[in-house]
Image 1 (spheres, rainbow, N blue to C red):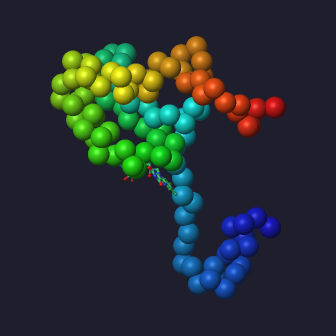
Image 2: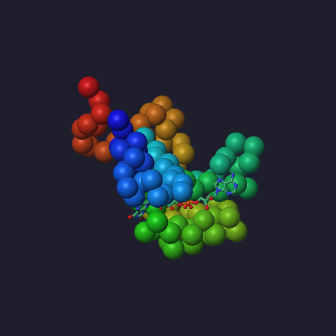
Length: 109
Ligand SMILES: Cc1cc2nc3c(=O)[nH]c(=O)nc-3n(C[C@H](O)[C@H](O)[C@H](O)COP(=O)(O)OP(=O)(O)OC[C@H]3O[C@@H](n4cnc5c(N)ncnc54)[C@H](O)[C@@H]3O)c2cc1C
């Protein structure tokens, strides 16, 4: 019996009308993605996601960066280059694992 079934069959679980799994998006390197979509969209579409379970604490700063990118394009993004250079989509090209972390991946054999 899995954990969910155990909970559902418990006294409290029987009184629960509904439950929902709590999901969040993960990138392979657990770093955010903040970038322009590129391609034919060039800098018309700004992408922010893959916050990998630790995006909430950065929301005020990320919101400011995204607004500046959406309104001011690449010129505005330039002032955040140091902060967002390792968060770009291009890091997965040629390396699907993204940013190197310098520590062992516990899931690899
Ligand atoms: C259990 C849990 C604990 C966490 N703890 C922490 C923590 O301690 N510290 C921390 O910094 N971060 C934490 N996080 C991560 C943080 O909550 C996320 O990184 C952050 O909320 C991501 O923000 P977001 O705007 O990208 O996505 P979300 O907050 O998921 O917002 C996406 C929004 O888009 C809406 N949406 C989705 N699809 C559609 C659609 N098709 N049409 C219209 N709307 C749509 C959703 O309803 C939602 O409102 C936690 C996350 C979870 C699940």
